[in-house]
Length: 376
Picture 1 (cartoon, rainbow, N blue to C red):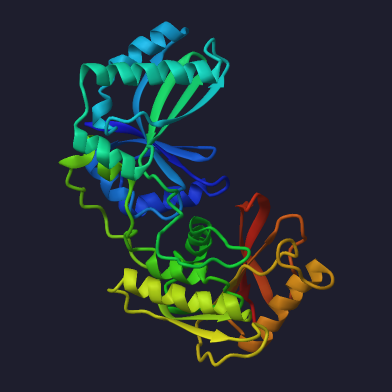
Picture 2: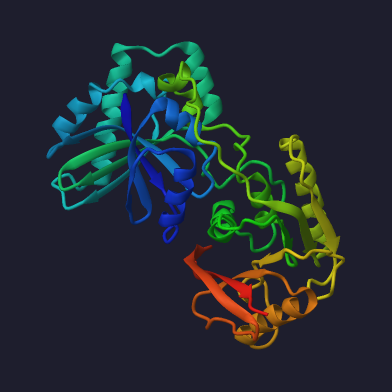
């Protein structure tokens, strides 16, 4: 049996997320602003969730119906088999409405809560389920009402998918893991050579951890694992998600406190992924000074300070050009990928040719990831 799934994607990354999904399954999805939607079996859903790295959340649509008044909404919700998705508790409910007769979000929420409570009055939950529910925290039910069409969608993830669970410390201006994966995937998926990857201002080394774990399952718990509907499900065998072709990975950080956090993150990552054969080689120092990197296939990737939370001196646009010029002079890498605010003009450095650009938001700021190819 197939179920409607809504895969939430950071704006601007929908096409990349669709390409990532195609690495794992041939199931067709429709692409829209901020989402991919398709029909999947529960076996396929349970296999996909730990593997996908670009999405933010995955929602399961449990019901959809026309409704114009609260009494009907209440009646419909009493008929849903909530025990397939809940452990006897009332979930956290998020309601959005648009162009519908049902417009009062609080009243919609109250009607659904009453319907769930009355369902459990007729079918009392088990004591052990209620005890487990108290330890897990509330499940999330998203209710969307558009032109009198009510959609009930359960979050299957719990914590956002970008919260991988392997990182102990974050830098002052961190990049979300799914955004880092999207940047990496945008150019590494096309590489036939085994490359060395270097982040000279790595912070908590999100780029490098994501590069190492792109083809690996996330080692954390998910909401769907506690839902009865998934209890007897055996995850479907998917297509093999080929890892990036990496040789050595290098991380450099100047700040002493951030560097200590980096070392602890590396240990935590290696403990989480004990089968990882590649290792991150770390150094402490100025990212604009030459490091011992012996590579003919080097790619540099960096999320430098923007001058907002982490201050930088002088003209910001000139600063980004200075970084690129310096790294080109020191290493003559194959590629340099840099993440900067969208409002700034593209840095231009002789010998570096703009290959790709990726637009999205990072921490509420419009940014662009620009990939340069060494043209000399």
